[in-house]
Length: 198
Length: 198
Image (cartoon, one colour):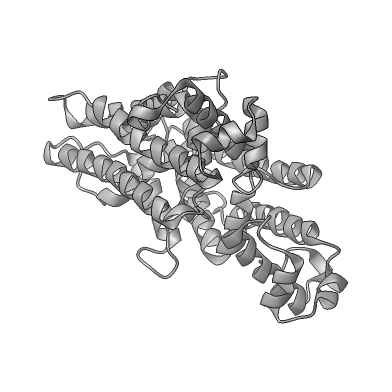
């Protein structure tokens, strides 16, 4: 998890708990992970864990909401201002690949939690960030159409194509193996923008 | 689940159990679904359920293995023989969209089971079918390159782009709403093959 996740109160200890929990949630699922497992994996007592977090839900919500919000802010900060819309789309994709690579466990914990998030309200706030992320890629595609770089097409569907490519990476991409994730994202941009056609 | 799933012993009752279980696994997860839940949802006794299936694992493995194998066989049967490779790629994508639409719950149960399949050996057999499916799209892309329809490029990555678009559909596509899944798949083919570029 990035240090900026929750403003003030992110001590080293809290960061350690969040990153360890993210790995546990990602590998054994929300239901398969207990507060005891988290304390054990962090090498701390359960009482110290409860000093920082009221329950498993709180840790989980902070990881999933935090990583979604941070993704959006990270990607927005990486868009080159004043550049051609197509280059901004490329930067959007590369930044997502980089974020995925850096915070892989939080990413996987968040994406696999999609179907049964324990806290509906927290899910809702996360979805607002998710919508903002999806809104951003659609706006970039619209700008590219307006600039004559992209042909007129179904913008929401084109946005989904871009996001599908990025969102599916966690299912096959192995860290420290093969092409780094940001390069994969750029190769995807090249294929989608120029097409596979000879 | 399609009737061909397991050859001989697929009675109406078994099909009902499989399709009901698929919906339960898809919506509440493997861990969140018990044999009691399945019996209740099917409106049958637990003893009748156990007459057909030894345990939850058996039901689950039959859904996930069965739906993966059937997907491959269905898609293979839909490829137009002797057609241009690009048209065969388009048919591959449309057939996957159709299969997804028909057996949505089994699809979702299978895909969300990725991280913690309870039976490693059954997972292995399913992965063989998954590899055959991925091998098929790669071969079609290679044929399109050899035929001069697609430019020389990273074939495994191009295959992943196609599969990512299809595999992510279950996360946003709503049945009986908007564009049918096979049409979405064809629109994706058009975007990927021709590119977004003007």
